[in-house]
Image 1: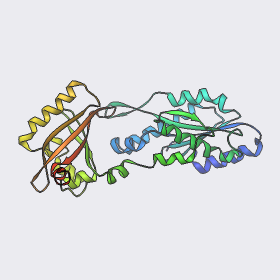
Image 2: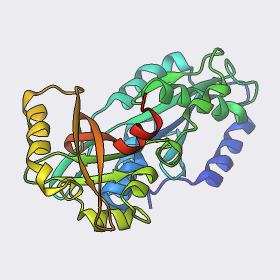
Image 3: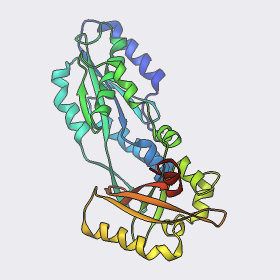
Image 4: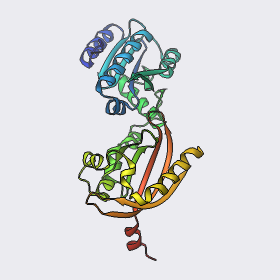
Length: 296
């Protein structure tokens, strides 16, 4: 799809290079697209493929003609820069990692970024064949520092840090002992984006599709009609105040799929999202649960 080498082709070209250049410096690079799964999930795999193709073309344009460039799989790419040191390559690598990138979906431009790690032979790796392993460690250090950047490998980077990245949204969602959901807070375009397992149980829904069907993707359908005005006033007061990151607390009757209602305490935080605009992250606590367990 991208016109680049696959990993097998990369390994073959690397072996050919090693045969006659064992004493020369080179730099190995690993990079991937930040939040690529989000792009695929929200905008579709066709858009995701466009991002990969665009990134592939920019790699070929940015790095020397004699570089070995491959798509490692998924959204990960690997590169060997021949006959240079990490210090010499750093300006070119930093410029590439910081370049502005965007894709178009339904006529709207959305920005995206990459993370990149690199290492040098022989300074970091005893064998050129090990260089990508050290580049990989540097890449994960970039992830730990917030993504969208490039780092050269250092000996104080440790593989053990990778465990800090081991929790995905699904891990947290499935195991967090509390109900939460996320929704886009726009008057003309309100839409629930996500709900975790505890939220599904609280509303009596079997799975996320069932929850979305029950709510018709709208937060207002979770609120008792008599409580809706009060709740919406509280929410829009927060939004219009511009207090991004401020917590809002509101009590109302939450709709359950069997037609009943549960009185809940809802505390949410509004955040400005690059992709969705004003978004509420909402935790929901069953008031009966609080009364039963914390009566004192």
